[in-house]
Length: 360
Ligand code: 13P
Image (tube, rainbow, N blue to C red; front, side, top):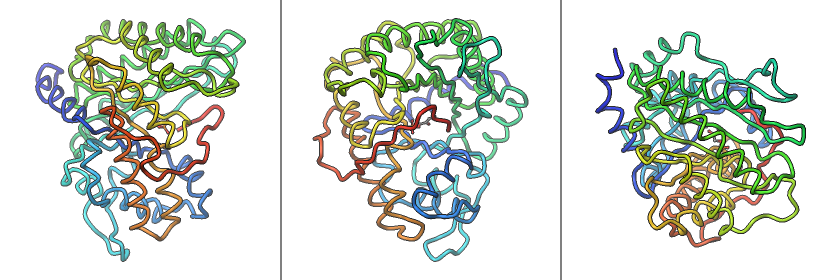
């Protein structure tokens, strides 16, 4: 199939994901990463427990009021659900789509050290066999895909020119490939929050990265109306002395996006990147309050900042309480994506979610 034959479908999927007042639930943690989350709550990382947890997500009442799409790990895309009594149920992917939540799939295969780059720099793997995997994910019901490239800011001079170019090119090759299989690419050039650099430094690096990414997308003929951007919120390094105000973050984030992201991209869906649940909502709210209006939907595609309370309340057995906690953060972020969130009005887990050198 060619990209041409998928154009209308790609644009309408991207538009559905960019629905007003909604965002994405990133539930595509690899088996190793979900294992770390489970360890924190004393749950064994077995297939049965991963199935049970993701069934909780797929059956949460009213989730689609605030969530337009869900990013799944490959295992989940091909897994059947269990009900609250542990009885086998429908495929998880069908439970999401029958509730009006568009299923997506993480297709990158993780990071590897970048030969020729600076210490700690990486490139993102997964292009080999991607066309076949994207085609089989589409056949199973997925309609969008995600690929997470990671850049870091360091006193040693990262990101290097090589790292920016390599990660931008990988994102562009991926985006073009999955569009040919009918999947909307989420283009995710994450800039890690590790470090003590100021917000001006992050903004300058992010402008460079985003400009390089959109140049590469153009080289590869990516159909922008059928794509979405998932950037970091423009923040100073985590080790910076004082946390910035939502107004300052909004000013720098919007300036960075306005200088680099084409208006033909329907939505910018931020990652939470180690912000706490409440911080992720407050900063998103500030960004939406400062727009007049922005040319894109400015929403969320949060992993940690949507699931932390849910995981703790579930703790391996309490499905209903876990679902309520998930719904509370989904509602908070849905409101924040319209600039209507009242800080502190929804329950949250205050625990810091930042992890140095985070892998997904
Ligand atoms: P966080 O919101 O936890 O950063 O994760 C989102 C994501 O999908 C990273 O690829």
